[in-house]
Image (tube, rainbow, N blue to C red; front, side):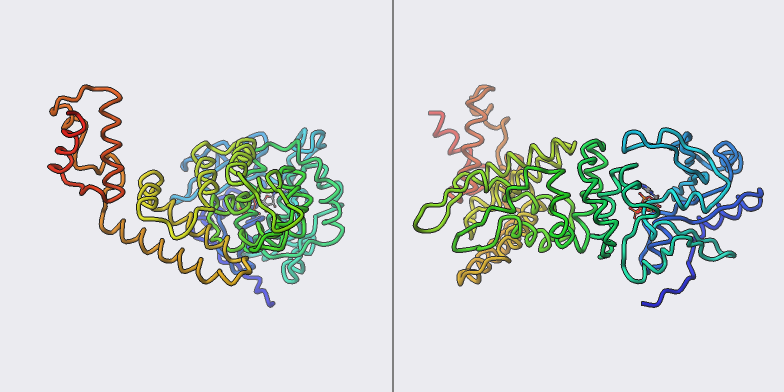
Length: 448
Ligand code: ATP
Ligand code: MG
């Protein structure tokens, strides 16, 4: 792969760099934006390393909106033409006594020193228009061969900040890079330190890892690191299905499903965790195939615990758990069932469920696969039809309201709610038409 060392810096970043230069300071693009530009990818955001101290940076940008994101660490955010750019003073990290935060940060006037505190060689390059690339750790060579290598002594770097262990896997997954052997060994050795890293930071890194194009392969190769973070998943590796559908381990199947769903974060989490309760439910008779009674609810429960520990917002955790709960529904889904799910969870959720179901089928090795795929396609088409017909799916869509029932002589209270639900059931099953007169007539009948 030939990499042109010419980086297109957006105007809104160039303006900030020029302003700092005019004031007599150095400014360099660093880290992810240099790495991604050299790979021909569009950087998520642009970070600058600057020689000015935080108060000086603020002074230079006194006519711009700025935010103190981490004054102590030397970072000021500047809003430039609608984009936030982080400007961090060249720095060296002090001693790390807790494997998470440096005890102190020392500002430096050397770019090289600043680059040497960065995690991987491919993240330790700096660029500016007139000087070109600064690459003291051969990051460009590693970028060309697709290799993640620590800056400095790997064991030391991971023990300073254990999150780097996960960042290493994350970049391997998103960039498709191999991990240099000494770096890999040190990451393995430091995996126990991840326990002390904040759960939110772990969650964010894990999620980026899961959404990478090489997520399954990265986790396959480094399962022990993941299992030390999520010990609930370790039993999956030694639990084989022994069913007609799969012969492999639950872990291998989970990875196959993971790589078969689109990189939507919650869908990826659902895929990773969809069968996590199977080992606890496995019963393998001497004769015949194994069975896993109650595994969907066990998986849902276990997934809920894992996501709670990782500080997921309830809304996200509920979504993953409900996808897990229903992923094993028999196909094709009857119309009434489909309408219930559409009413309760909405169209987007139902199509995510179908994606999970389809991915779950992908690894099956039976001659019934075609039949299952057809049933899935039929259910999907039916869901589309129901949505395009704008069928009644919830109490909100019902042609009668609580008010209507009150005027029939119902009293406010449980009986009224029960009647509305009863009418909705009848409409969902197609027994009654969603027509005001018909429904009022039915409600009258119940009351008398
Ligand atoms: P992306 O923004 O695409 O997720 P990135 O490489 O920009 O990737 P950031 O978390 O934005 O990652 O960090 C910016 C840069 O800061 C990194 O490229 C790296 O040089 C440095 N960095 C970030 N976190 C660490 C860390 N834990 N240890 C050492 N250096 C780090
Ligand atoms: Mg970044």
